[in-house]
Length: 149
Image (cartoon, rainbow, N blue to C red; front, side, top):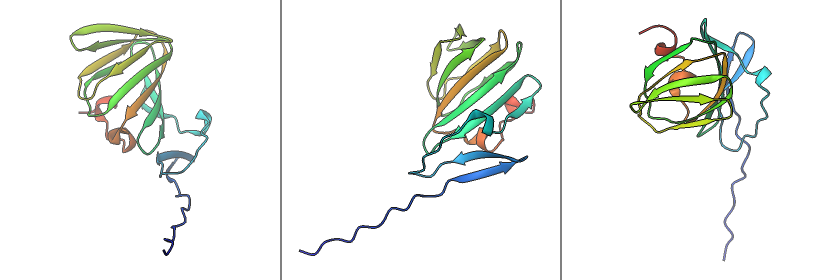
């Protein structure tokens, strides 16, 4: 019986977006291991009260979001599942007919396509995990966060 030749699996090269001297991972290719210090990720300013950093994998995205007290994230929805973990501060969400305040150390799991709005009750740092990655955030077409329609 003849042995099948196995294809060698060379590590795929990651694709990157370069902006203002910073490297931001756009979407990792399969098999690429990355160690990413937050200080190496571009801090994108969306408006005077909102900044974020993105690390994007093949099937998942992690966003570090910095919100100043009073920052409003307008009502929106997306096909992505979202898990929000508050590291510091607190966010008030209006979601599914409820007002929910999520404090530091707490998590909110938002199903796909569920409209939601949020307000920073104090200066807040949160980690948002999305599956799949948010194309509108990666491509910077998320006008609802930039004060544009």
